[in-house]
Image 1 (cartoon, helix red, strand yellow):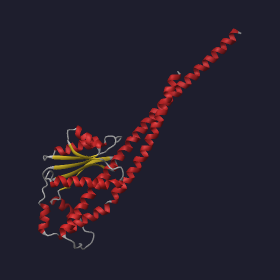
Image 2 (cartoon, rainbow, N blue to C red; image 1 turned 180 degrees about the horizontal axis):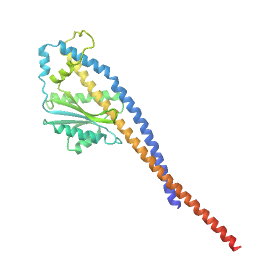
Image 3 (cartoon, rainbow, N blue to C red; image 1 turned 90 degrees about the horizontal axis):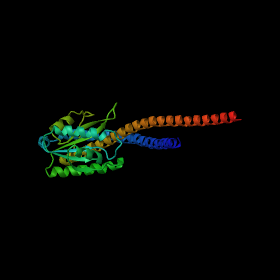
Image 4 (cartoon, rainbow, N blue to C red; image 1 turned 45 degrees about the horizontal axis):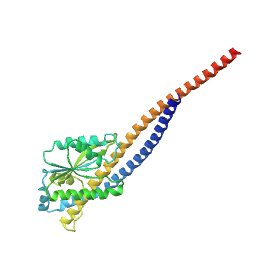
Length: 295
């Protein structure tokens, strides 16, 4: 009886300690979600400004300059940049994204180069037979995202200069209202005619377009560089927000399971303890009756 009770007590203590860890991870995940969501929204105004700058350039650019952009091919070797996670305890976060990436790329006939952001997603992609050409560790804070984006852009530019890729697609989990997240795809490059049409459909906020006074090519290069940077920065922060939302949900499920287990363990412990008390009382009563009868 004693060994069984001690074993139950150890299990209860272990489960209680684990529950404390889970609750701490819940708090950290919830705080991280808020942090990354704010980072995403903080980009909205700047992203809008860059878009309007590109609209102004397209309205003012000479026909031959616009034609130079329109001749960019919307086919050719593909670079897929996939944002997953470096850590576990995120439910099906990486598995669902890997399935989405593989399904999307299977429908594209051109050759593919895959860049993975996060060790966990790299493993899932490799396991599925999709060879990862290069990988990047995820940043552990918002301040480190800028450095990551710079390294990814440098890698993409290097691949383009060597003629190894012509298209760039971003894959990540996007926060979704009413659900934790959903996997999405965004084409980052080329900046072709279809991309231009999407920009020119934006309405200018005033009745007068600004005039570009600096060199047209320099202005365009600066705006495109900012456009690519913001796109990657936002993709990374949305992925990190989704990751922490998935971790929060996983911790909530774990906490419920631990609570249920603790309830069962405590009930079993109290039943055994009560049974032990009943047996001891029975022994006392039996001994008392035996002494009384012998007297």
